Length: 244
Image 1 (cartoon, rainbow, N blue to C red):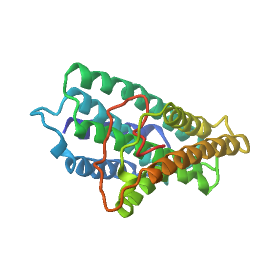
Image 2 (tube, rainbow, N blue to C red):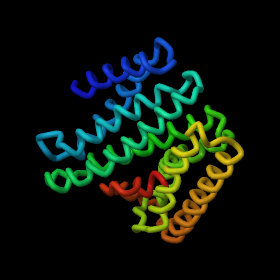
Image 3 (tube, helix red, strand yellow):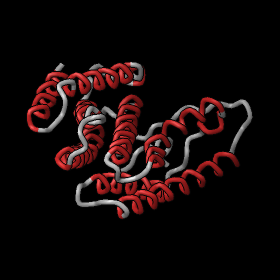
């Protein structure tokens, strides 16, 4: 309830300071409601009686994602672009806090890791759409956000894609670069063709990283075997299954 009340207040403030439509607050609330409903479905992986401080911080990040996502379809103006970039920077700061809180409170859980993973993936999807909407890159930039969801869908069809991936510095570096590039590309000062070039390079690196992991998974495949989806509670980078 506190998160919802904060969202309503912040959406109202955005409505008063940015050139957005009257439906903006309703879109933000609806999007947050969808995220909350999805999160409830993962609660079986939360073995604690309390929600926990780390998950509360992740919920705050979900509020920022809802506010940013609600800007899709709103006027494409520099002030909106700067606001999105600022929201992403704040979300990044919070992303570094919730991991420490989970470890200090000894309340790290499968639910917390999955919740964090999905919020990160959704934020990257939102940034990809906004970069495209702002004319900073063609439609192919949407692949940056769709990558995690396509990978997940592939795992439903081919069980060998669900095998947990080993830790990788390459994967971490690629996902960090991907996030930074999307934030930089949306800034008003960065215009095509510069924005198109940097986003294309970042997407190429993402595709390469995916290819490496897909080849590894293919080499380790076991017919008719399903593997549990392991979500690591890492705050330095999204889980490899969502952004490779």
